[in-house]
Each structure stands twice: as structure tokens, then as C-alpha cells.
Image 1 (cartoon, helix red, strand yellow):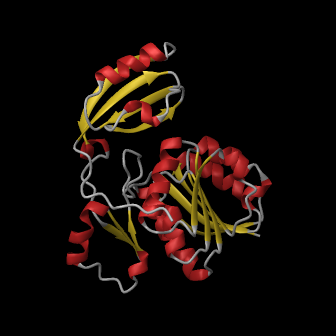
Image 2: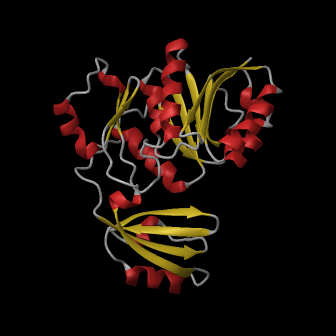
Image 3: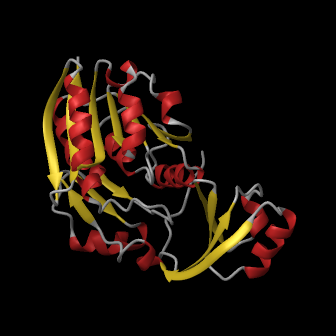
Length: 284
């Protein structure tokens, strides 16, 4: 069985190379200081823990279709918008692995130790502090108190936080899906970190190819345009609970209008900062 050791501290400074084009090289091409490659919209962001100008310059020679657009250096905290610290939502406590000892000494005030999640976001957005993620965690806590979903599909899993939380709250099988390869890899890392590999499978893939996956709950904290396409697929809301989030107010109104055309019940709605909207519902 594969095992993993919790990291002792986050990265210091990040060295980021912004490229136009799709990188073909495998991870081992970049050496020991390589953190990951975030690909999006025909561009790539290469992350290193040390400056790696020669490596990137060699890459451009080997893959001449690539162009260096810019490079950045920033602290790990700045990349994530501030220091990463433990926090709790409902029964779920989220702790960075490098602060696990401090969190234990402070005490969580919880009797259910199995609701604690170690989360190392790496360089993937999704530390759990965004209002939409908090709302999704509240919704997941609520639905698991009503009727623990045995099988869960988490679309746009990011760091894997919600997928792992579902398993911690009692779900037996969770499919954690993300289109981005680095996100899927980070989610797999966190699954191993929490010893949840028997319950959670993190994979890379498109939402449209997995939407007919039979599940009791579908979680979708993703871009509006993707969610809009998914909801038009009747398989999306077929006989299961759903958590929909990541929606701005105007987008949420359109999604709600679409939901009203289905035989669904909206159980609860969250609004954060007058902007972000989240829905918990059930489709008959």
C-alpha cells in the first residue's frame, strides 16, 4: 500500500514561469525543485521552489512551440492570499499538515477526531477559506446528517477537500474529478495524506464524461459555464442530492431558473458577501 509522509512546512518562495503553449515534457524533466505545472487556456505555469532559468531555457529549445511570457517570484502565503491556518466548519476541521501539532495542542473542541482533515494545497487554489467552499462544507455536513450519501461525485475537486470531507462524514465511495492534471495530482496526495484511498478516488477528466456516474450526491463548485452545460444534461440531477456553488448572484438566478424546470427541491440556499451563492437540493 502506498504511504505518504506529512510535510513539515510549506514552501518558501515560489518561482513561477508563465508560458504560452502546452508543455509536453514529463515532470522528471524539471528536476528536484519542480513543484508542478498548472495548465489552463493554452498556457502553462511552471512552479519551482528555486530559480530554474537554465531548465526553462532548455525546455524552450526542446519544445520551440513554447514561449516564455513572464516569470514571477512570490511567497507561498502571497500565492494563496495569506497564511494557511486551521479552521472548522460544522463537524469538519481542516488543518495544514505542517501545523498539525499546533492544532492538536490547541484542541479542536470536537469529539469526532475522524472529521479532521489534513490538507496540503500545494500550489493549487483551494485552501478551503473561500466562502463557496465554506458553504459547500456546511451543505455537506447538513446532507450527511439527513441521509449519509453512500456514493458521491465531486466535480472540480481541486485539492480534494470536499471529496475527503464526504468520506470523513460517512460516504463509502467518492469520485473526485478535476480537469486540471495538477489539481488531480494534489487531490490524490491529500487522499493519501488522510489514509482515505479505500474510499476516495481522484482522477483527471472532463465533467461531461462522468456526469452519468451513479451517485447519491453530486458536488459541483465550478465555473458557471461548465455548470450550465451540466444541468442541461438530465443525468446531472437524476435521483440524488446536489450541492451547486461557485455562482455569482446573476449566475445563480439563471441556475435557479433552470432548476425550477426540473422536479427538484431546494433544501437550503447560502449567500456570502452578497455575491456568492450555493444551493443544496434534491432531485426526485
